[in-house]
Image 1 (cartoon, helix red, strand yellow):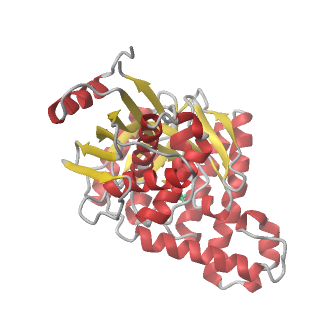
Image 2 (image 1 turned 120 degrees about the vertical axis):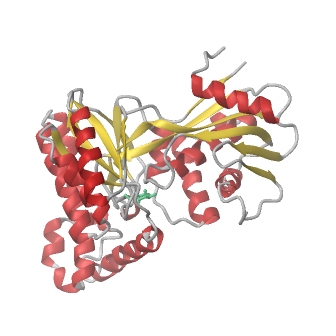
Length: 393
Ligand code: GLA
């Protein structure tokens, strides 16, 4: 029997309040933070995220019919639906992630069964740390396990199904990064993911450094429309560049030298969007090399360059994110800092020399709150394990 940690125990206690009898399993889907490689995933490019020690958990047991009942502790609402009758829920928004995942899993050919359980998460919501991927992936593992079909799909297939759920059922046009790292993350490692081939490799997280994440707590209201606009601009860039470079199908195929040589084909705005993506892919490769060489100063420089590129070329930063990054960089032990995730608000991430975490945290609390008049949150997370499931009995 699995020794329960405190959080799982608390969720089991919630289970006991709403059902008779005991749950059989707990499924865990972590959030993520991206070291570098931002807005590259939907351009068939490269990303370098880590899974966080914050997650969404679902404590559950299978049912013999096709009904799914989940109680969400933080929302105090239920997802309650039949696998044979799933329709978008306008009232209980989070239920669409559960339904979408069930729908996408069945589309792969898996026949699911119902389950009942309790879901609870500690990934800050709406902060760019992928609480939705944590929800999707924990739910996917729970549904597959209830149907005795955990082995039916690979981790990559589970991640793809969850992305499909988010794109086609929930209606959010995200790339594959968040679901991928939530499913396949590994303790002590970042993953270098090729978002075209979906091949990936472990990149050991450096022993001499820590990740400090600063949550701006600023609203991300523009995020989804601006995200879709950026995607469209990248596609426009590819279409224009194809005139000179007929072999390309995505910005992933373009080098900086090619982009410079053909910039007259692009409007100034589209050129800057492309310059970010092309440069960012090159920075991911350089970061992996610098990590292998143990050159953390270079990793920090690349992270800083990523932020400037996101700020001036891709234009997805915000006053709050810039203030956060500035506060982080004010401490000498901060090797580099950048916004992480889609941008427009949410979180920034700093690579910090071991032992300097508190100094960076204190600088964030003092300087950011003064600059923005908002009280931020700071998280220090090791590179953690990806999704997992445990039997409770
Ligand atoms: C969001 C999306 C990801 C990715 C990032 C930007 O987190 O869900 O797929 O596009 O933005 O890198």
